[in-house]
Length: 71
Image 1 (cartoon, rainbow, N blue to C red):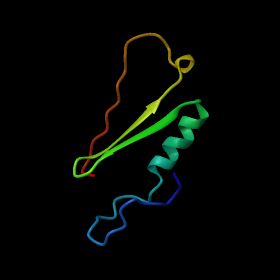
Image 2 (cartoon, one colour; image 1 turned 45 degrees about the vertical axis):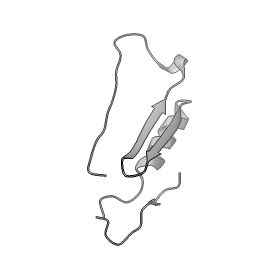
Image 3 (cartoon, helix red, strand yellow; image 1 turned 60 degrees about the vertical axis):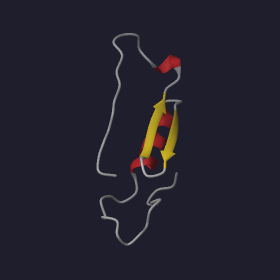
Image 4 (tube, rainbow, N blue to C red; image 1 turned 180 degrees about the vertical axis):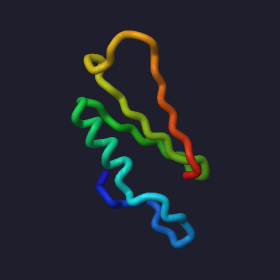
């Protein structure tokens, strides 16, 4: 994951960002000993998951963050 890089550089795509999102997610994940997993399905989209090591997770209610958009 490199900063300022987009996977789809086609001319018909809306310019809705500068390409730092996943780079920043990866940087924060690295700081916490986590890893970023990407799963892409053609014509369906991409799912990005951050997997934290057990020692970084507090016990308590489960938390699931879901982001969605017009990607």
